[in-house]
Length: 195
Image 1 (cartoon, rainbow, N blue to C red):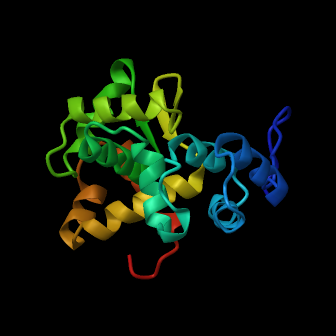
Image 2: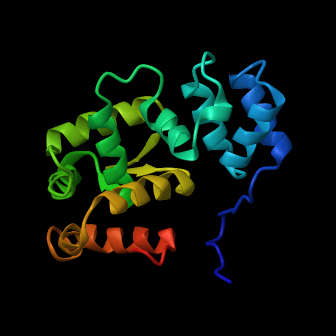
């Protein structure tokens, strides 16, 4: 078992009651079955409950939405003006786990953009900026991450499933070494024999 550095704490999963409480705060009047479904989807991660609550439109029944649809709701939010740009940025962040976002680290966006059709460094930056403004992505100094991990992994899986074998090979052989290492690290979280 890995020990944490002094002063660090690891929090376990939140109880179903905590997740229900968060959801009731953000989505008041949520029917019981919809609440249970979102609690299961959140998987003990309070941040997922908060993000769903912020993004959910009360006029849509939750029972008809797939898990992939819930991920879309979180990533795209309520009023997305350019869903392709935002989803591409989210998938790029999911594939790499961490991307440079400020100063000289921002150049990593160009390395990541080459693997996404129609993406440029500027479009990724704009999409990531939208994700940051809604709390979906978090800035840590010069870097940007997508938390909690289940959300990042779902988006990484989406990107990996869109790419063909030659694209996968390019991710691991082209571009900056730090991005190649990050992509390999994120791939280990997928735990899917098909990839």
